[in-house]
Length: 303
Ligand code: PMP
Image 1 (cartoon, rainbow, N blue to C red):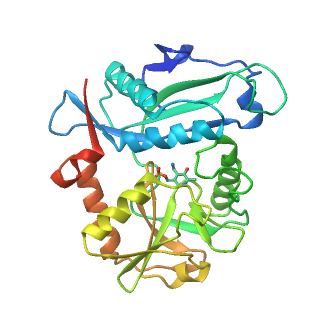
Image 2 (image 1 turned 120 degrees about the horizontal axis):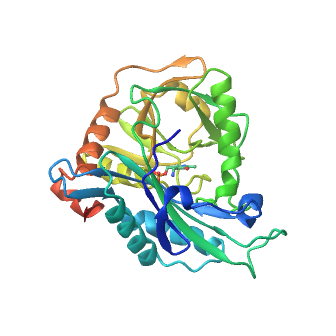
Image 3 (image 1 turned 60 degrees about the vertical axis):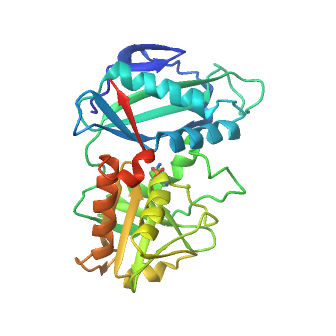
């Protein structure tokens, strides 16, 4: 069971987490017509009166786009104001995760997005490592990542996570830690809740945004940092077999941060990971606000 932050934002006010409950007839519960965000925050290691949120603006922008897909007009600055208030009221003392969620909130049946009420809530939980920082073993999923022509993959639409759930459970129940999904073109797309990177001959390669991926904010950050570190970066379709012979493979995400891959199916990867290590070190320093060049990625909130 998670340790939830004491207050949730629910129906336009802050209430104790235990009181933020929905009816079993809530429309989104039945049809997957919700969308969510996921942000990490930490107490500022150098100032106990501050909490640091990584790329708050980008997370709010992505959630606002997800809302638009669900025909809900929820501006990014409104989401940002609520999350800022949420953090001030909860004053988290350890590493935490914020889950803002928008959804069709009517009680009633029939899948649709028109003529239906929508709402927005926020809650948080304490969150340490989501995947083992030492690395994970992955398999290719027998499930394929959905296509953008079937649902808006640039949003974090809750219904889409059935595929992630099937893939993750298939991986874990068959002795692996995580799943990598191909898209319907047979190219590498992403993991159950992370983007995928490989390193070959010193070049950092990741599937492009046209490969049915979620446009990960950690992914975007890594691409920027890598260019800055003079690492050659290429976004292109990636074949499954490239992962077997890659020099390094890692997963990226808000929860997973940068997690190295140790083994894919029966192929063991090298334990030497110079580029993964370099990127990880830099990303950690940035999230702790220790890198002056990236100060605008870190939102310091006084609590
Ligand atoms: N893909 C999926 C399906 C995800 O759920 C996530 C986590 N939000 C990611 C990729 C990584 O995105 P981000 O770096 O923005 O957390």
